[in-house]
Length: 333
Image (tube, rainbow, N blue to C red; front, side, top):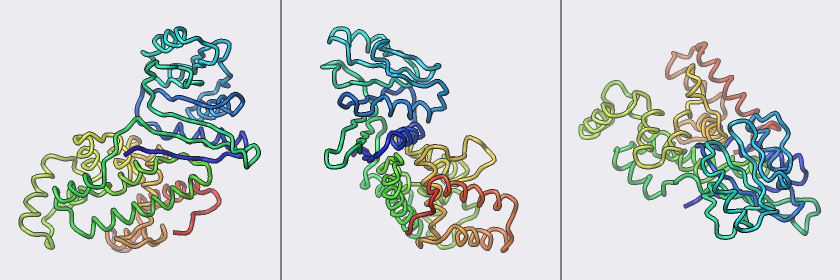
């Protein structure tokens, strides 16, 4: 199971904006991103938006004549348009050891060369809609667990049914949010996000400091053993669990889903992390609610109905995330 995202861009500015969001959906480096499309379709425009999303201040220009342009230590922009087959192989071999992001235009001219591509972007014109571009993004860089695997993990850790339902409703919310975000030109890895939603509370019980009175003796014994092995908070525990099973990037999406932390490394930054964190705060048990309803529940359950300074900062963080993702207001769920 892979991940694919399709965006429609009616203007150059929208194309740059979508490319900027792609820059917020990277989980490892070095990485190779290929750009394919006919002459004048907007590949360099996309590259400019991508570089800006990385925080690159210098304007990206077409490297057609220089063939290769490096921007800082993180981005190299390569154009294969004017190269012959042997020159293409030499150029790609020369840049293989670059430790940042290789962005390759006219990758379809590589002809047999192994690009080691991690993300493939194809830009095309829509003939029925003048000046509208279709941006198809294929993510080949991370492994995704199947639903069958996730269900097996739930059985393995004896996850309580009410937490299973919560995870699945959060996944449904993530799917709805993704549909809305795609329409707005926001690049989101749908399948990665849904997999993270289905596993974000996979080890929720590690936060229980005493035996769960509703659990069986066998469940409590199993959870006690798991607590000894995994992180002391359920976000870190789920991240560790997923990493051990070959899905570290899904673990990274899960790791920040609380949405607010005094630890900068635990705050959501990628698009998928932001969406999961927000979706989780729109689900109370297995019901879709407003942010305020979810935080009122937190106050009642954990602080005797009072709003603590941490809770205020947390709520403000989630509100800011909502405004970032949905500047025109949140979609109806």
